[in-house]
Length: 111
Image 1: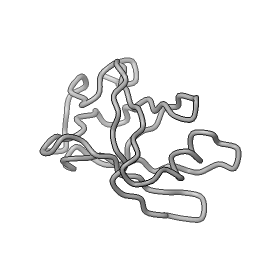
Image 2: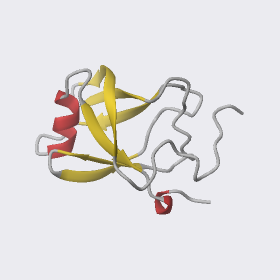
Image 3: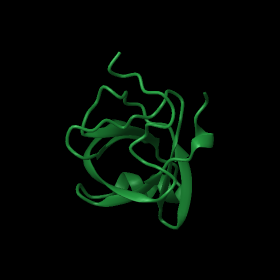
Image 4: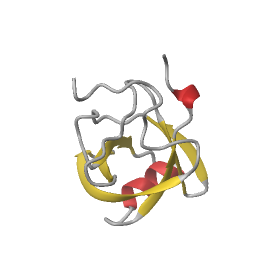
């Protein structure tokens, strides 16, 4: 039950806010699992199947976190890195501690 969160309880809102990259793990030759940090003791609070907007490298793309709300202090994105993907390459090459901008808009959640 700890992993359930109703729509509208996300740690991010419609304004852009940064989160630091705190861990990276290669999953395959072209995919990486990235963990971004949140305030201590806070979960992402995102409804299942909802996405976050990510801004970096001059572009904005939607990503659906793969972590559940049971993870406190962070959230995880699984990113497939495309050869010509400006944001996916940027995310995969970030140094630990670097930040990227996130936002969440209600229309990315289903009731």
